[in-house]
Image (cartoon, rainbow, N blue to C red; front, top):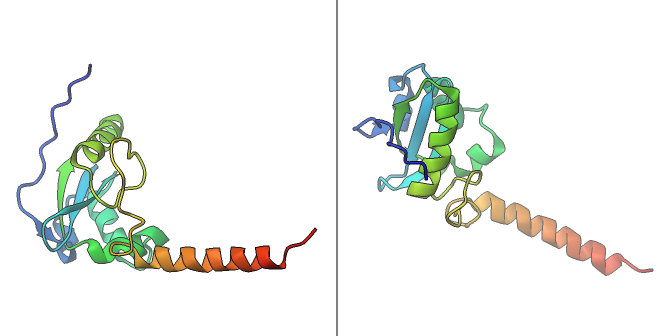
Length: 140
């Protein structure tokens, strides 16, 4: 059995608009909602840039759909790429943030629930309606 000692995580919650307080170093970031509930854990080689990118116009589709859940963040500086990968996987499954999809082994993610990601539900309904129509029109 491998035992991991948790990395040092910044003590204070930082407003997401103050992303520039994160260092331009590698590490993990932790997003919290307005009730200080952990919503997402990620890793990056440049924490400041990555936190900013989640909130900006260049964010991925998934980030754009769920970023309304992010109010605060904390971070942990981890220079080693391998250590970041191990700690990210470990901490996701230990703390069980609601919006992680990848590396989720020990719990069910809430990423697909309407209250956290309403656009996903709308898109899925459109797809299912298209599917149903195609099946109605299908014949052999």
